[in-house]
Length: 232
Image 1: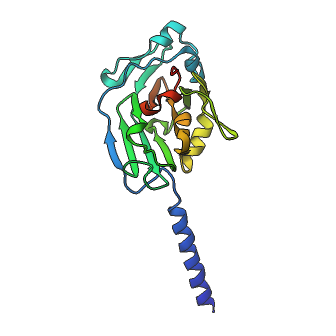
Image 2: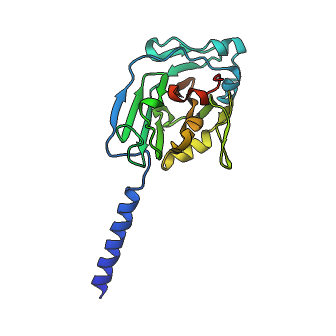
Image 3: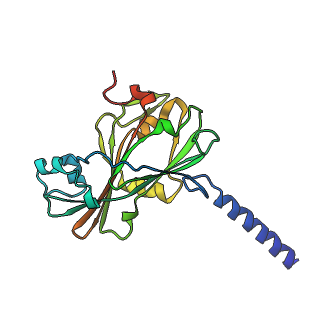
């Protein structure tokens, strides 16, 4: 009897473990890998964002001038810190079949980041997909920040409001870290909800001594231009 109970328990354990391993998230066994080779445009960071990433010693003029200097992936900062442009990886993994072209996509951006046109990867089929980010420089850092600069209009769908509004700057560090420990950012394509949630720029900063590692990704979707700021 003890042997039978042990076997039953072991069987149940394996079943639960198997279910846990297969829980949907941005993690996948295989990805369709896409590598962006083009360097991003010069990264210009407004003074307000420098304050959020604790670069308060930089003057407004100097803060707006940061960018360029991609040679060697490093640029000098007026705040006495070295800005180092770093790699960034984006993961798009479907929960519902047919939502993501390729089912699971891994996008590797060059040092400093770049722009991702979501219309290349997300279909018109209604369903859910997961978004993940990996910024290697977040390992063993003194301080880290994730900032989101929204570039979509607020809109109401049912009883929910989607989108943060034009040019809204949000410190999402704590929530972002929590989401990435789990399934990632879960978004839905119905009525283009994902565009309102993701449309804008995610900026990543990690401080190590006198170096600040920086990368950003801007999500666009020309097919849904009316949802973005600046559209009539």
